[in-house]
Length: 123
Image 1: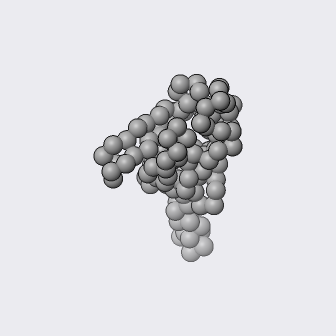
Image 2: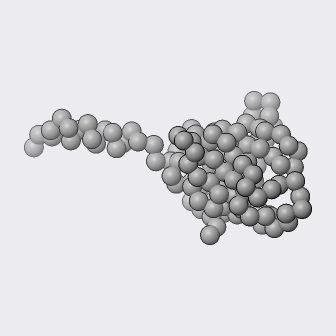
Image 3: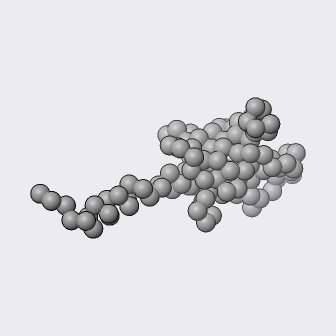
């Protein structure tokens, strides 16, 4: 059976479409239980905004964006920027998804020094 050119083109287009960004979207609870972040599409990337705080008297604020311009950088991986409300600085950021566990990291010095946080899917 011979495939028609448009069927081949459609199949190739589906294979080339990045679906990784959709898998990470949703609400995530920080391992310490101190906050939740909502990850959603923002243009061709993923961004994360604080959607819940256990203690709202600290430096983090509801609605504050803490992950910026996270773009797919491999299977289950994204790279972009991460803002740390505790020190007010923005770092080179990464996200790695493994099942229902998301690990985020903010790095300095070209990735030589990183601080990571684990998150689990939440409602």
